[in-house]
Image 1: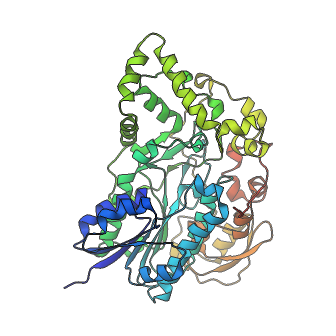
Image 2: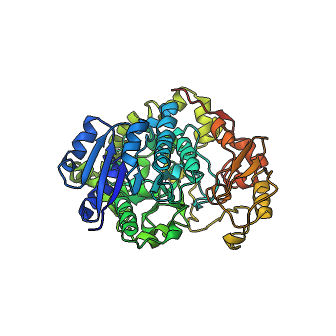
Image 3: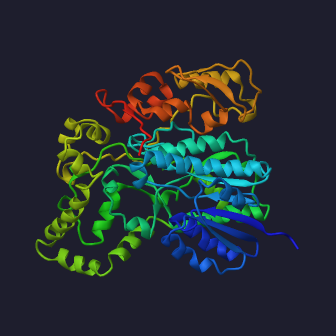
Length: 504
């Protein structure tokens, strides 16, 4: 009898983990499941039904508990590391966020090595679109290998960058990092946090549904278990995205959502001054089809989110439709919604609060300057709107991407390092070796080691610059590579250095 493969899922009670579990429970003839999540009432309630299933083991605990993690990981064939401390809560506790998100990934990697399975265990790391940060038009199309640029105050993204760097350089034979995008579904439709105003009206995202995220994880596992997964899949970074049918700008999303309530004039319901104009995250992907080609997981379009939104409103939907058909009804309904939205925007982390308290650091981060904010119109109809959504500005990665990877040599690396404002200090390199670590110096004289894989495919470079501050204006002056994601969406007067603090 063939021994079943063991799949460990961290964050099994979460949004993406829960959807993954719903699919994999139907594959217990092929695999055993070890479900790991925090020991709290929410996790226990969500995982209670799985505790009784044959072939499923549920472990409640902390991923920072090295001994417990080792006991769970040592016999795992596949580890789906989905658990994370996410925004907005993560941004309030930067030290804890780094401990959890980077520390948990490190504990798992260390446990794989300790169990002598570094060349056996499959480790699937879940990264985030937030690693590449603000990609407002006209640079709204992107791909893996573009510069990493976590938004100011986004400690979740900072921690995930550190974790991804560690995974790429771990020496494991079977690692992969999947950068998750915005997950649409019932959970997203219930968001009421002020962070919703950080999402710029002209920002774009290529979303994915919670269900398709779960299907992706399931198909990855079963493809590997069945021996059908190409070895070339491993040791790479991929963008997760739902494809063309899941691409939408924030303003377009609002037009559809409010339109379904009978609100066709957004001036009644949206004040553009309440919304940031930069410093969030999002892009359309040039390369998200790579995962689809491997795992064929896409089923849902953005319409799935619209329906989730209406389902969440429930009985309010027919009432709103009646009101908006009456004379003056749209204006009345818009005012009601606007009052509710304003209550969120004045809270802690809310954009209106930044303005009311004249918090210049926050104002500069989310609008560039107070003058920029003052120039924003109060009506959507008066906004100067971007229209050329299909135009692709493909960023230069600083080396010949048409050259076979097996021919990559030291001169290629030296040129790429120079394009990043730095220098490759190594004098020797094995041609075609993407995993071997080389010595570098950045534009600010920090020295570090990195593999070509980390730098060229991952978009990483100097770890000290990344950990110390958000110093994007100065970096753009010295790093042509990074300037591509700064200069097109910032004026010359915008930008300051923000030190990163890891104290809660």
